[in-house]
Amino acid sequence: MEPTPAAWADADTYLADLLVGHDPDLEKVLEAQRAADMPEIEVAPLAGKLLGLVARISGARRVLEIGTLGGYSTIWLARAVGPEGRVVTIEAEADNAAVARTSIDAAGVGDRVDIRVGRGADVLPTLVGGFDLVFIDADKESNTIYLDWAAKLGHPGTVVVLDNIGRDGEIVRDDSTDPKVIGTQEGLRMLAEDPRFDATALQTVGIKGWDGIALALVV
Ligand code: DHB
Ligand code: MG
Image (spheres, protein in one colour):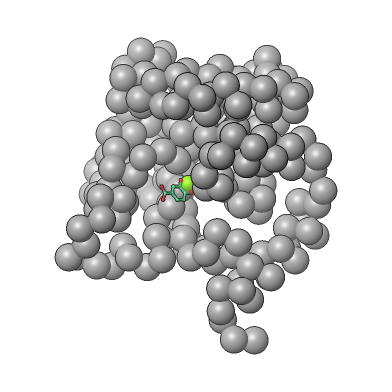
């Protein structure tokens, strides 16, 4: 096979059909997002399942998400924490939060999910810590602020997942003027240099193109 974006997407779909399958609640989330003209930048199904598995493998009970969008990844995390667990998710856009609220409730996990509307930098200082897993998937320009709060609101053993670390390979450009690329590079440098983290990163190709996630432990 030629390693083209179309071939990556076909293989991604093959794997998602096998390992995620048909999930009416999650498919409705995407329909609601589309109907509201929200960008289709939620995590791919296999990545959502990975988030849920990481949460379960780490035994996370309190999860913090930065960047709710339509609630797609939120539902994966809420399912993973179980009925006694809690997800706090921060969304800057009130319209997005309203769509997410409806979808999360319809998926049957609304009682575990607390949506806080506001900019991350404003909401994060108001939260009580003790989060076991933090998923950062918001404006890339603020990645270092979010990582700092992830460490402060976490504890040794907290898992941090940072989305969108590949950005079509643009991360290697030291002359980039794209604020999203620069924010991604700054986040990765922080994960490398800040002694509070031990981190790695995985590139991904698939229905979302060429991107990736960083996975870190608060040490
Ligand atoms: C963008 C943001 C995301 O969280 C994502 O998964 C893909 C793209 C963006 O802002 O470009
Ligand atoms: Mg993302």
